[in-house]
Length: 338
Image (cartoon, rainbow, N blue to C red; front, side, top):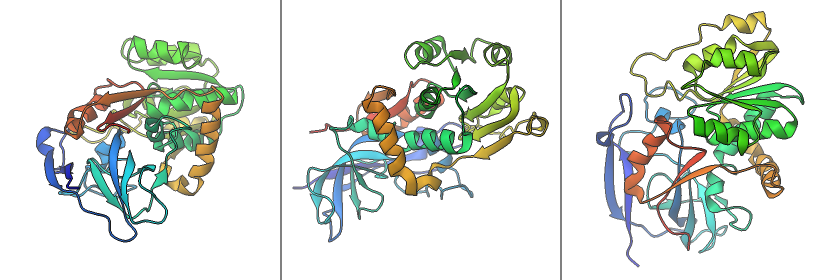
């Protein structure tokens, strides 16, 4: 059966927000798997803030996407042809399949996804990289204890919404920082946060004084910039700051703004630690098992923003992240599950 693959390749390094000219949409025949390979039809594409950093040249925690390469992306799909002993036609799988409709894989980094355990899209969120980031970043680096105050920025996003829920399971007081009244209302009314601060309409420093009067014990930062700088002024003695992301800075055309209030770390004997989820690859099974248990028990909600379309909708859908238009995990559905 002859198939055609549509894919997005990086055409230029973006300056500021990615533009349509930064991509090449390529059409090519779909190859057949060789011995040890499988062919996956992509169903769901994961759209993540980290993708913006992967487009930049220079040293980072992961090599950049090179000009002319298929854009890196996590995805869930269905095996449609296989000459790999570990995967059969009809298996649902997740992996780094890229922004394309079909992917030939040798099976490395590919795991099976069980739709009976959770909806397939959840394997890109709660049971995927965002879930692993939230779980290990909070548990291993944040080290929250019952009764402590945890503040998370980007709280209505894929990672932040999970960080807050996990902290509540542990027994912490949780304050989320998000943009917009509806997102803040969702955090409190639906996800059980103790309080939410709307950075678009409220004075963050003033609200932190009210909602974290004894200081912030754990700050999980997804946004950087002014929000990070403000929270640093409200740290408790021995606080732990987890640096997960800096979405407010990713599209800057000027140098990244660093924290001016870093001396609060010294005064409060606090720590600031960077978190890269790939460092926990050998423990993913542990994280998935615990998060799946909480999901099944109804103690954790998978907040998703699933956009239906085609691979051609990738560039515009990606921009939803940087406009703050998504709530929870942003996923682009490009094919039917069956």
